[in-house]
Length: 301
Image 1: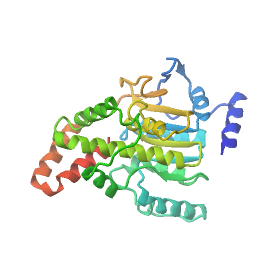
Image 2: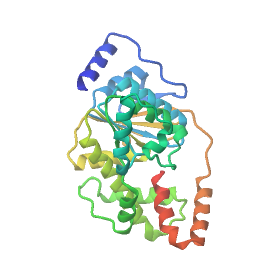
Image 3: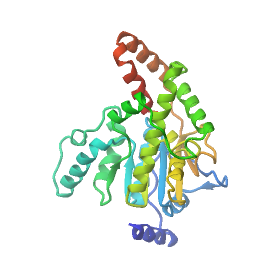
Image 4: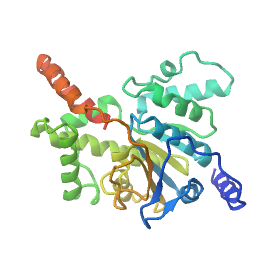
């Protein structure tokens, strides 16, 4: 697969053009230098990496269209998705084999055990494309049962970078903000443990995956200052790692967070706090389910 990338770089060197990115992709900035890049320049930068981490806003269709384009032009050694859990891996592998044998599947989401919390209308085209490629599609998340166990009994996390006090404090503050400052303070450490164990799992899976490995996850997970790259460093991962964040115009992304940012047009803001307040009201009616609601809410951030 490294030969595929080498051939692709030779193609670029010959001044042949890439397929045009989809509409909805705006300005690309190299955060290390401040330079504006074209799509071909960005691909050159990414194609030389051993690990490529791409952060998205989950509900932005422009981001999924750009990810689909990146898959086509990079042709990685493997693709890892935050949206897939380990218990789905056997299904994913079976579906790939059936499709490769020429079988048609009437209900692909059901065959994959796709989780309804991830909108198939947004992810379907990307997943279908990946399933038809010769490289593996891999789960990068924790199983639901693992998440609940971590929430109840947070394990110790090894490594000096991910456990640094400023990192954990920043994560806890983000958890408070993302839950509209309505989360009981007693739950914050457990929620941070869930977040960090998910990042650790993503790092572990990247290191196990055929290279060059590509990860698609929420933007917060791929941040260099708080997310998966810290865990890769704690695990002595490769130095040739690149982080690209897909962000809406107006968002603040700096060189401490990523190597590159690709700005897309801003979309109307949704009142996530209204939904959170509704969840809290439901939790009061069903106290037995309150912890479940809290843990699941963070999974979509």
